[in-house]
Image (cartoon, rainbow, N blue to C red; front, side, top):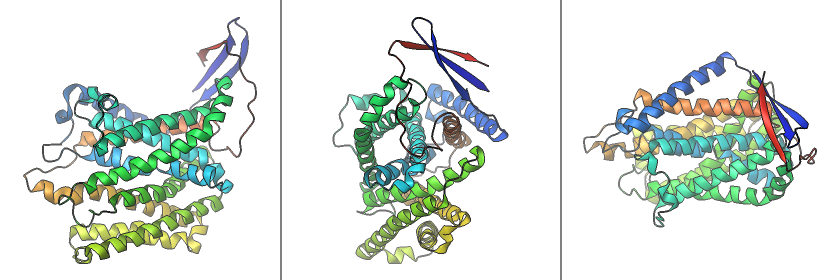
Length: 407
């Protein structure tokens, strides 16, 4: 399908036309179908409430949507601020080719998080109240505000990309504002990433000792940084197949090494934490919690470190294994903190929870919407092929409006 947007001035003189395209493939039809079913379930949830569409109960008020769409979504979307820090602050120009794709993935990830929060909140129509009710002592209040502000900043950062193609008159102003937006965009995630860990730090005696720690804010922050490389490698691999684009392997290997360094620091803090708290007995109890905890460290941290600093990272297959293990380790960690970590405490009051099929479909639907949006944007804007800043050309006059025609 192709859409042509024609820009005209007030006198009716045609200035230029912009083509929009979106190729429908079997996989994209699958995404569309899942998204359509998910939207229908979301509408039912908004009308009939959480009870009609989830298996949540008084003992388990947080389920799949919080753990997957919010906690995990925020972590996996952390690649944007990590790459922005590396490229725009540390000036590692080698990674510039993947900067826009990483920031786009992050933007779409945070949009999914915001939608997840809206769906998960009991009285969703009161979502606006934190903007006017100042809960200064609440960790969730700070998380809400940081995520909201950061999502807005990311939208503005993308507008700098979008105005290279449409509404070009605004491009030079957004370009001038980019340094300030980048600074804000790097600062805000460090606050809410760590605050999500702080939230579970407050649950003293309720979270399994394997996952409760005074270092939880630091663990959440570090893991959100090093998982960014894994997400970028997976995203670039999938984009390479879908959009016939390949990122130079040296760029991905460099990202893997930076991620590996952060993982080494993470592992050191984990070991120090276990020594200080004396939880080694829990780690090697070889019950279900200890096996899951060891799986996080061995498969999600130690093996990826070995891959990152060995010759395995010089091959695409090795990098894919690094990314899959890296991302899987963080996924397992976030699920363990919510389900395994708090399961024993919550279940003792008679409440048990297993996600309903509707919860699974909604989560998959949000991911499908993000994938479709990524494909559309990557096909129509300078995302994957962007190598350096271009001068602003063909600035449109302020009295421009537009009309659209499809063909």
